[in-house]
Amino acid sequence: MLDYFSKHIGKYLKYMLLAYALVSITYATARFYNITGPPHARTRRSVIEPILQEKETFFFAPLDQDSIEKDEQQELESIIYYDQLQYSQRDFGGNREPRIDMTSDPVFQSKAFSGAMGPSNVQPYYYKASETNGGEDISISTIVTSDRFPVLSRLASRYQGPISAAIHINDDEQKESILAKLHQTYQENQDMKRHVDVHLIIDKFDRQFNMWRNIAKLYARTDYIMMLDIDFYLCTDFRKDILQNTAIMNKLRQGNTALVIPAFEYIAQSDGFHHEHFPQTKDDLLVEVFEEEKLDMFHRSWEKGHSATNYFKWYTATEPYLVEDYNFSYEPYVIFKRQGSPWCDERFIGYGANKAACLYEIYISGIDYYVLPNDFIIHQSHDYPEATRKRERQFNRKVYTNFREELCLRYSRQFVASNQWETSVADNLRNECKKVRGFTDVIKHINQ
Image 1 (tube, rainbow, N blue to C red):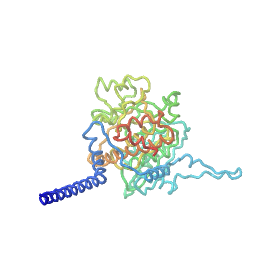
Image 2: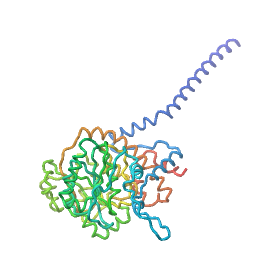
Image 3: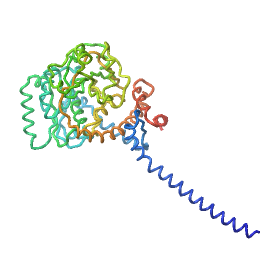
């Protein structure tokens, strides 16, 4: 009997040991996969979910404290206070040295545009406007390619105010002929000479839109800019209305408000080629929207791009109103204070998300969007390279997903460190970043 139990107990022990070994191996494998696998799965979900779900959720990749502090230091070093560099002077016993012009310094430029592809030959004020405006004015900040020189000339005559234009020219065999064409355009229109600062970018890299936007903003010579695509026609004199409105100017001076100019386009593209027939009052525009059904919001096929403007509210608005239904694809045309506002992130190359990313960071930083009730712009029709746009949009969608996560983390840390987390400055961030999976837990440990 004792031998019988001994034999069976030994067999059971063997089975138990084997089972234990299998469980251990399974547990170790699961733990290993949990460390190495999910980040990739998360990345895939962060790309796929915006397509499958109406509301996107995503979360942060874990960062150690050293990495966070290193990123913050790099970000701090990349901030350029151009006005301070441009006008700084050193005092030696009452004698002041001449101001140092940093605009064309190659080291300055390599740091200023270190996030872009390069090197680029940037020539600020290649042409410099003859009329100097006071600091408290609004410059149109725009980017121009060689096929849009006539449109820039038309904009100068229409706006009759300061324009900071970043013009990109490919460094190839056509460069000299394009420069000659630019020179001719500038010489033929006195409004170009009076109002337009041209900043030339010569390199082999197409569609670095955010870098070009930064150049136009950096070298603008007024306190406020309107970030505008060159193909829009200015239907109303918003510049005069804003500068003469004390309440609106006070909002701009504080630096926490951006003014939205609603954008429209013709439903039939052929109607959009003739700017001389565009409406120039809100009443005339409403006739073409409702009675003639010729006009609609810009890019109505992509409602997320402009729907946050709330066009139905605008049609009856008589006072500026706050954009409340914000979404991260929103791409309005805005006027805001140049100093203290974020720069456009230069990692976006090509079509898709570049402007949305720029405006998203402006919003997350604590700048509210207010829609002006009587002003509007209309898109002037032209052909689109849709095949190129589609490919680049797919790539930039992935870049934008990661970018939004980074912004939520970076600005959260900034607001907590500066004791602004419980203030209205952080409202926009809290409203947007609460959509981030795990964001609440990140905030709990943000100082640890």
